[in-house]
Image (cartoon, rainbow, N blue to C red; front, side):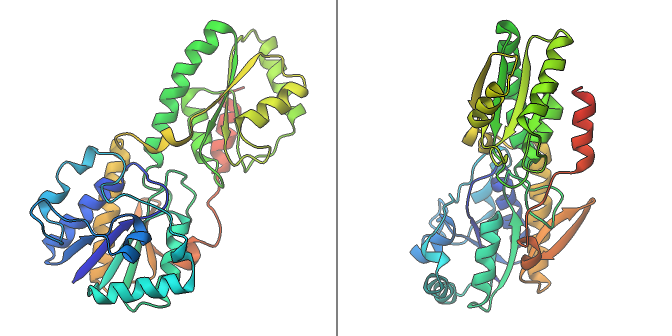
Amino acid sequence: MRIGVLCSGGDAPGMNPCLRSIVRTAIACGDEVIGIKHGYQGILDEEFFISSSGELAMGVRSVSGLSKQGGTILHSSRCKHFQTEDGVKEAAAILRKYKFDALIPIGGNGTLAGAIDLGKHWEGQIVGLPGTIDNDLLGTDLTIGFATAVDTAVEAVDKLRDTAGSHDLMFFVEVMGRHCGDIALFTAIASGAEIACIPEAEEPPEVIVKKLKEIKDLGKTSVIAIVAEGDERGGALAVQKLLKEAGNPFDSRAVVLGHVLRGGSPVAADRVLASELGNFAVGAVIRGETGKMAGRVKGELTLTPFEECVLGHRKVNPKKLRLLNIVAS
């Protein structure tokens, strides 16, 4: 069996360990893996990973050392032409040309939506993997890259806390998360932040300022607020402005962490998740599964139809939001 693998959309720590697991599992089962570079664009451009020995199929040594390496050696992209029916049909024809039997795309919501479209015009099997730091996909409790992104954010906030304490400041720290506030919420809990502004929890500026005044009355001289980029009020700068107009008692600064959260060596939790899901996806392909995403739900490896995964976006656990409100009070 010839299995293609690609990374699409934003990169996420853990994509490389996932690729390593896919390649070595397939080889152990007697199958071959072809790495497709630059996501769906790479199919259209017929751009494949070539091993150091000049082979098209990825070998065991092609993925050596990838457990600790961030980013993706296959590179990633977003392809506008693939979002058209003509582009999808063209990609399907190219997959037939190179005699692919199956495809394992690693990415987020857009990647799975692309897989759905491809499945309408290509008879091969498609099993997807949740590679996104946002943790916003339905069909899995955790996405590949989320744990590392939170660790990176917490490390940055810990450093900002030192400066906030030295200058009696409030920092508004913006993290990624357009549809799900998990990065912001987990970062806030882990870093001891006092405020979290996330898409799932709407609090008027006046309510937040009331909290800040209570915090100041308790004798605190510095504060950290974590803001998800998808917060309904806007990002860190917008929230900073709104709270200042509402009477924020703290002098403040805004910091946008942005794409730094996507980089870095994946933490152990992401390496394990990526390895488990990569292995599971290959097994699913061998068993004849298609049109589904591999995930882990309540500790069990599961397959969820693509259509269910892209119905909406995963939301934060209300229990964790209540936990933040208690420990930050």
